[in-house]
Length: 331
Ligand code: SF4
Image 1: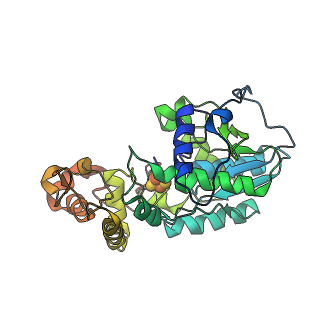
Image 2: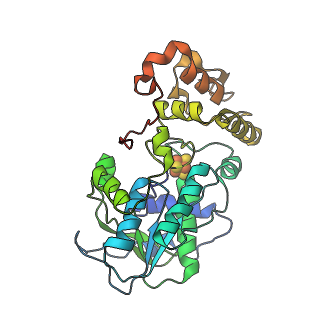
């Protein structure tokens, strides 16, 4: 799942993953043992509770519609007096529209959206790891989102911060199980509160608050993006990626370049952004030297998505209408 899926949680499995990634993080070493950290009791706030007035709100802002809706609500409609910090994790793999949109969002909010810099860009991280992340080894989220956010918070000396996450229950079964209030591992010894104030919102409510505050959602939605995140995210759907190829003339070359660079670092001599089963085997165009199995480079993915014999598979975007948004943004 893409960028707005920053999982900051008290889930021990997630914390374990986090600590694993910490060991690999050169710039920020923990002096606290995991066993001594996972001890804080669960947050016992109820759904409708608000943060204490003296807590500083760290509003995780991705450039997506849900986090923008949350930011607008917190700033203009919640009535909360708390200091607010709007923070963005730049993975170095963002669409320029998203970077421009965050500036616009900051103008509407009357406060700059600050950047929590990562130690590596998406490409640098893949080169360091000698492979691209995947759903099984999703190290990108930890290194490019969670760690930079944790580091940023630790550096600001905030008073009892609350991390505000713009996730909604409607979006997935996993998110539907999330509580509105939670805790997360903080600056390697403390926990922070997590608050998901728009968890129960519908997508209609999300677009309605944009309209009330005269803010257009990120233009990527009108280009057919289901979610805003890395461009493209490793979890992108076939139809969404096809839209991206059709709308972004430089995308294929950029992804080819990334595969070439990570391939140079890989002991296999090759690295592919997408898993082999992303496209049918008959489109595979390379062989993994270790497993002996066929794999698909970005050229194979592109050939499959843009090939004339596959058009019927993507009825949803066949006519490339002006607005390909999955949310009906064109009125
Ligand atoms: S590729 Fe980017 S958006 Fe997708 S899961 Fe990784 S960090 Fe998140």
